[in-house]
Length: 266
Image (cartoon, rainbow, N blue to C red; front, side, top):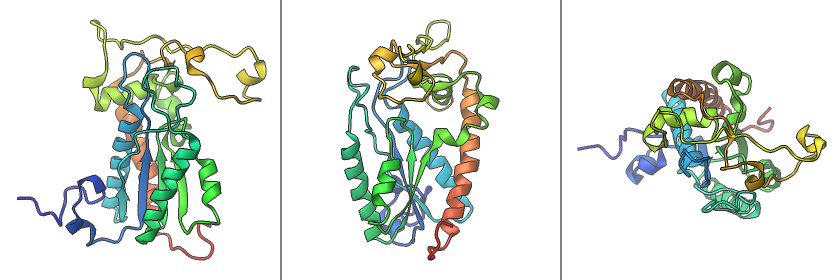
């Protein structure tokens, strides 16, 4: 019989008992954020949420094994989808709603004495920098935002051959590595997906990034994919996770060990 006070994953709240939790003081809480949305024709709607579950679990495990008292909360499965609502079951939380949900979760953590909080985001539509700015000065929480896909930009070309904005080579590689049974394939073993090409704007300033818009994905893409998935492999997905574990796991260790003094985080 398993000992409820000695769980297999003492960093993972969804698998913990109160008997285990009350024996610990957690220095860092990780809140993963996902989404529910289409990913071209071949990947499940749950990709972003699964990525939050997977990466959160792996990086917290690595940190815990190095002595960091981290706690991984369940992934929020909904995000901001205002520009994908032309597709069925792209389940939207407006930014203001998402901020309100996060505010309540952060206040719950502060109430129990956990002040260092990492938002581990898997969904590009979750624009959370504004939330950090709103919370600064009016909350005792020390908030950090990690869009994990931004943390591998320097090594991305060493792992992948093509850019991935959504449901392309990177995300398909993750799915092939960790959830291959959920990837829709053709009889020849290739993904049941188009090439993920996107339509350029009529405005060159938008194409060059001088001007920003909210991109309507039903006009930007054919099947909600932005990035070619056909060079994906399970090996690439596993290599990506290795890099994320090394980088984000190390950050969590540093964060857990850092004192909350008057100059934190400097």
